[in-house]
Image (cartoon, rainbow, N blue to C red; front, side, top):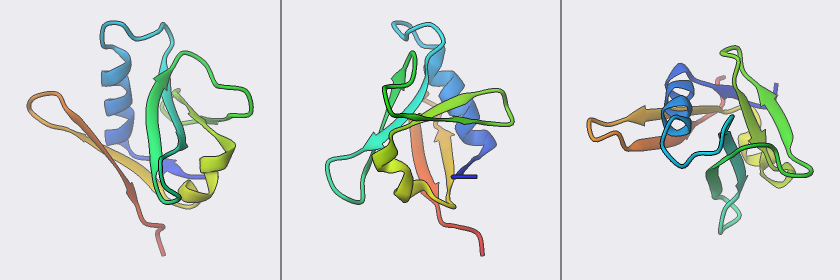
Length: 96
């Protein structure tokens, strides 16, 4: 398994995918960010060419750009939704 996705992250992705102006069937796409240690999270209707599709136990797919995989390896994607509906994602360290 490349990485794990917490229940909070699944709920957050579903929350974002349900918003207006989101493509049908949209899910989270993870790609390289502006620095070597950063990731960019966005919504996409389908994987981009070369993306790896990560299926979760919650019947959800997450699209991961090949160049971003090394930052995710062994970690857990987590998220929280605040009272205003703002989503904050975080990467938890590998379990030991």
